Image (cartoon, rainbow, N blue to C red; front, side):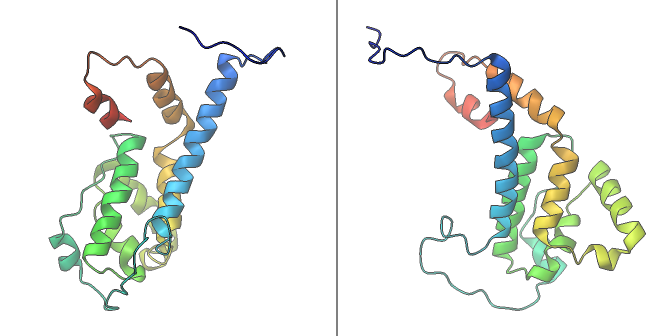
Length: 176
C-alpha cells in the first residue's frame, strides 16, 4: 500500500537537470573531502581509539616497496583513483613513512601516463622542489587531472541507469 500524503501544500518538483547537478556537485565535493581526509592524520572519525605515535624515522624506499603499494596507471577512472589514495595511505602507515617522503614514494607508484604527467609537472620547478609539495596538494593535482567533470558526469549517468540483476548486490556495491 502506498503511503498517504499528509501535506496539503504543493511540493516543488525537481527537474532531472537539477538532480544531476546536485549529484555532480556532491560527487565532486566528496572527492575533495576524501583527499583532505586522507591527508588529515588526526581525523577523529578515523582514529577513534588511543593513537600511538609512530616512530619518527625516515623509512627507505625499499621498506616502502616491501609493503607492496599498488601502481596507478590513470586508465581506471575516478573510483580507482580514490582506492589508490586509500591503499597508498595504508602503505604509508605500515611502513611508518614520514611526511617528507610521502610524495616522493607515491610518485614511485605512478606508471605510464601519470608518470609522464608527473615528470612534466616536476621538470620546470625541479624534482626536489616538486617533492616538497604536501601529499594533500599532490592528491588535489591528481583529482584535477584524473577526475575531470566529464568523468564524474559519466559515472553519474552510469549510476542513474544502473540496473541490479537478480541478487548480485556485491558487484553493484563494488562498482560504487
